[in-house]
Image (tube, rainbow, N blue to C red; front, side, top):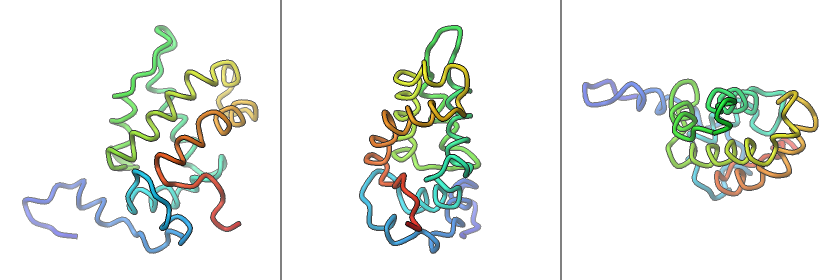
Length: 145
């Protein structure tokens, strides 16, 4: 990383992300997410509900959804996705903002009692994940299979 007064801490942190472990299948996909975004998603097991990528996105979605107003705050989600610990690029973050918005609109009933239930996961995977995958270029399938 470059340590001069013109380099922001965010750039230094992003520059330090190891992209060498991103699988070939992920390297060749087209989408809004850059290689650093893909490295972050890969390191957090983005293809699995048992990794920490999807639970973190769910946590952020819940934080940005007003249950009183029944409204999703897109800017709140953008701010969370582009900050530590994810540091997604703005274009990549937008894919997940829209995916979270989809989940709050399309999966309200399925996720009403628990956002960690199989019915909620199934709804999100069916209704929202394909669009997020296409937008981001980050595959939702396990790269080892």
